[in-house]
Length: 114
Length: 111
Image 1 (cartoon, rainbow over the protein chains, first blue to last red):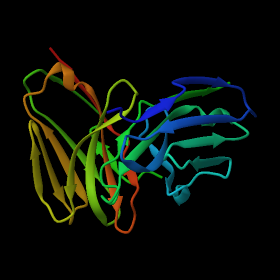
Image 2 (image 1 turned 90 degrees about the horizontal axis):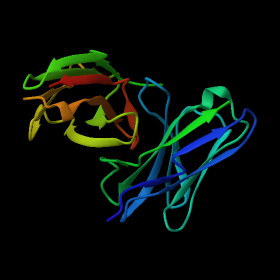
Image 3 (image 1 turned 90 degrees about the vertical axis):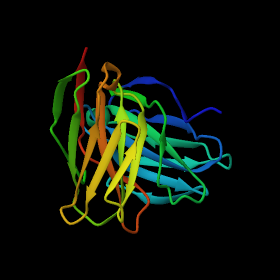
């Protein structure tokens, strides 16, 4: 059983560009959350998707948007990239009916904005 | 913003010793969880303790929770070099379903 997968593993962009990161949840999981982890910091919650809708959102600007597909996979889009968007982006999935208590994380996508 | 603070920020011990990390949080919680992260990659869930529990064990891990002080501790007994990693506490606030992480403790276990 595959765990949470993310693509790509690494990405280099320049300021002002747009980026799309992808996540496939663990089998049987229907909820996907995205986190941003700056160097030396803990992950910060961006948003959570359930049933193809954004259910909760953290304190991130509208440049950060997302989508969840019918197969529960998800995308994170960031527009007008800033240098400060350089970070590890983590996707986490959680199973049906457990109140999202335990989240299973993917390996992350490391984004560098130059 | 991050809710919790871990203490210490970094910890260096020898194999066989015990490692204790502490975490504080700010709001009422449903549960508190501890995660491990190796080399800046994905996080691995270690243990969950609910707000009505005071202590929980899992293998070499022991977690305590003091809701009156809004604090938790993680004890790793008989540490191994493979325990070298960053450890994060994360809480789920009452009425929410998302994790709020602290800044983490970097643990180095030397052979």
